[in-house]
Amino acid sequence: MISSLPTIVSRLRLKQLRLLIALDEQGSLHRAAEQVAISQPGATKALHEIETTFGASLFTRTSQGLSPNDLGRCVIRYARLIHSDLAHLREEMVGIIQGSGGRLSVGIIMGAVPLLLRALTRLRRKQPELSIEIVEDTSARLLSLIDQGRLDLAICRSSVSHRPDAYDCLSLHDEQLALVAHPQHPLVGAEHLELSDVSQYRWAIYPANMPMRLLLEREFSQAGLEFPRYPVETASTFTLLSLLQEDPQLVALMPHDVAQFSENFGMVRRLPLKLHSRSEPYGVLARHGSVLSPSAQLLLEELHRENGLMVS
Image 1 (cartoon, rainbow, N blue to C red):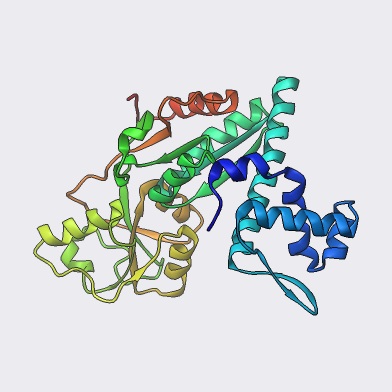
Image 2 (tube, rainbow, N blue to C red):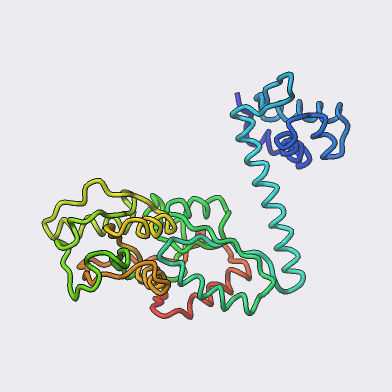
């Protein structure tokens, strides 16, 4: 039986977490003890206390040393996260004391990357000592990171959550979409296209239930066309662009700003297809009722300066 949360919180010590990380790195209790500067008997006692605290065995004892089991790997992963969070905490405190710098963690969906980069470029000119972490993922995963307190802000959509009221929407931004293909695609250079003109080609699309996938499904349905069979599904910007580079017959829907950025570097060409559906706006989101850090507030001010902003 795994111990209760109050039991774990009251008994677990940070030095024990350091020992777990050292054990994972060294694979030997003796070497791990040396790494955290305690005696081997002290390390043996500490490991016993850790396993008692969690109410479970975390390591398999072998002739070669200690090897973490499934529970052990889980605990070690969180031990590393806690250690990293403490490092970020100190970094942000130093920034606050110095009156500059600090740390900022921002989540982003693909379509908002150009918007964020423009805002961050201006912010970094004002705060050159600011450390920034950018996490690109789906809206659902970014909202989960907000819930865990691992992001200051996320630029994504709250509608994918079962609890959209758990987030404060600090601003809204429209998103335009574009159909893109390899620069040598047969349809490059066409003056006007209907969906029926491109339906016969291979497609790279977003996974099921993502907003751009739902919009594309709606476009095909309204046009009376069968949705593309055997597509390649990905939520990764890099993978999508790589697929388009490798296959001149492939087409894909992506945010207009990302398409324009990629076209400027000769990676893709936009195709003249007019979409009848509008994409759902994305927002700058924070946990409901949370107080923004000074760095997050500065970023929000920069995002407010972007064109197309609708204050919520």
